[in-house]
Image 1 (tube, rainbow, N blue to C red):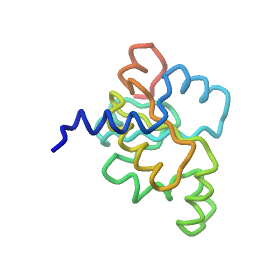
Image 2: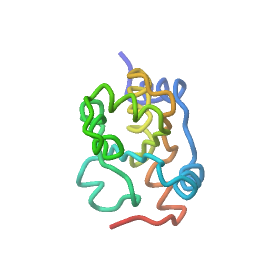
Image 3: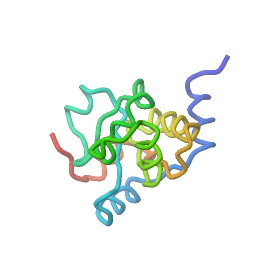
Image 4: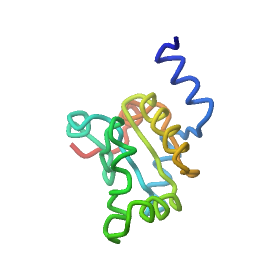
Length: 133
């Protein structure tokens, strides 16, 4: 039996984590940066990064093909996933644990440019970066 902390540590060893500064730079440099907030809707409603789309960790895999970046094209889910897989995806949660698990899951789905934001929204807020409330 594994603890949640062991499971998270294993996920973090298998994924790419980026800092909040890396995310901030990506958002500033590229208007097509895809940011997915995997927190629960109530957490997202309190505050979130402008441009983030909320897909809670529990439904991420079932809904990712509906992301606005590809959904407007009206294509089949498989094609939408293939289009989305061409873009760097940044996943954020409160502290970096749920986003690490979600990143690992998306890697298993075939996404190769998917990153978990280390420290999550807490680190983002602590750094004084802007949020939408």
